[in-house]
Length: 166
Image (cartoon, rainbow, N blue to C red; front, side, top):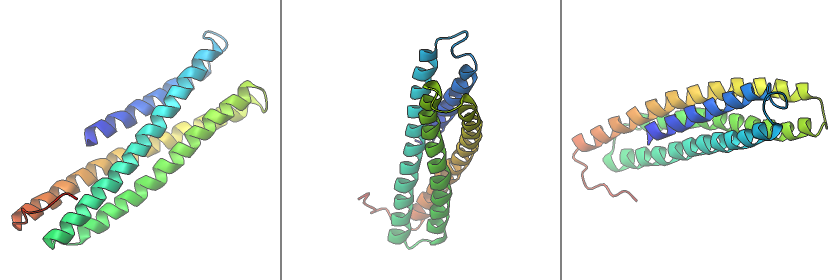
């Protein structure tokens, strides 16, 4: 699952980069509707990948906590996974909010409710934060994945083979 989430996060970042690049050609060499459609798809993919990453951290953290409690393992693993989850939840939430705001502002710029430069500046900020978010999410996905394997190994070594996954 970790690999799938990493792939989705990278794909969403590439889609956002493409939309950003495409924005400078919209209305000139490509129809505006193409930019709008691709932006909606990129927004959906970005929000989906961040949301799934957050849910994965919640689920894996719960599994680690249950294994630690059932196997009487070192509770430091639970503290680590909670710290990882806290960091990822903050950055993923910020990235999702910025991506959604950017999409909404794009509609405002298209209808000339406010100047296009606002949409451009927001686009730069959104792309920067999204890049940082994807980096952090990938880093902590890998760390949490390795932590889960470490806890599973400790659990098996203690002879706690009767674990039920409820």
